[in-house]
Length: 421
Image (cartoon, rainbow, N blue to C red; front, side, top):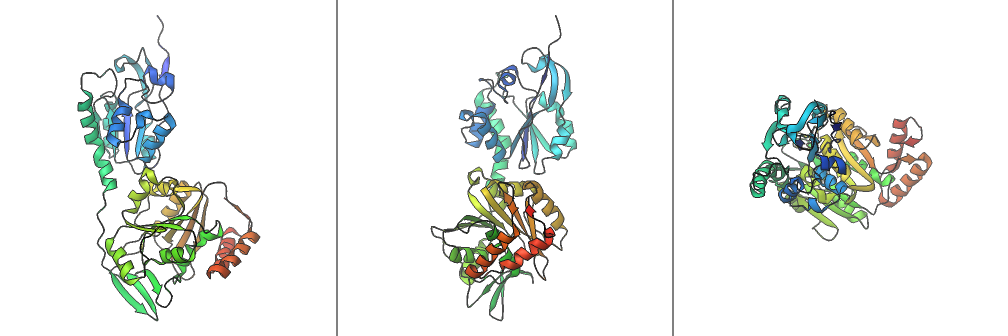
């Protein structure tokens, strides 16, 4: 009798948002025949995750199942890359060769831990822990592991997975020391330090006082003004007031981690009340964009997330920027305020380039350290400078924004060459 043919595992289901990696041994015969993870009708994997996540995963088609897992920060793979095996039982595995787990772990910057689906997979625990990650062994979802009731398995899986979702979903408002100052008719917001967090012209609150805030509206050069906008970080509410009052047809969601900042906006910075076009939400920006329900909800995302020291962004991981892209419907624009004089600038720019397939433009702010980054989701970006200059003149006449200067800055950065990204 000849040796059995070698079998191979699937490619991982994973992206940079993954916070937990579930590892099995190697797919069984039914899964290999179907070409998908845990496809045996009596394997309890999808039923277990459906119960833990409270989503009907086991009734979805395969691409949607995987999409839901990625959106929830779950990655899948197997510890064995290929082996010989008669049937589907792990005890029949012969001559196994391991997958490159170290390589996968290096590509998952947000990963918090690894869960092993059964004891065979757990043989990789030492390597995982050597990488500085926590791990746990769960009762196998395999139909061969029938000695434990489903309810008991579910309790163990829920105990391992639920804390991660709770960390994301809960938000405790951040306490911020609010300080106000006024100079020559302009009111400024500070978080207990001299750094300016926002400003408002008292005689005309809708005017954008700060140059970098004006440049965060540069997305208007590339798409029409009627848009669903997500603003991450409220500050003194400048962008919120401007978009709510000057851009007809916009709908705006503002996410601010501090109830103190929201209260100051309403009391001291003419922040409009919530209505059909505006919602101000006290939540963590990173958790907000990570939720699957936000996928494809917005045309524009404006990110201005700084703490009292106002040096580097408080949310700047690759996973965060990938989520910012995911919440955009195409064609969409993500606008990020970076501080060019801080060491975080280079790493943030690199992550934005990676998250948005290098379709990124950068605007320097005259006389300041701010750098405004425009990151594009959708078709390749091809812009004729003549058309962009014409668009800038329209914006200057309609909204009073110095858009011609923005175009000049982009032309200079591109060396005058045609803009293609």
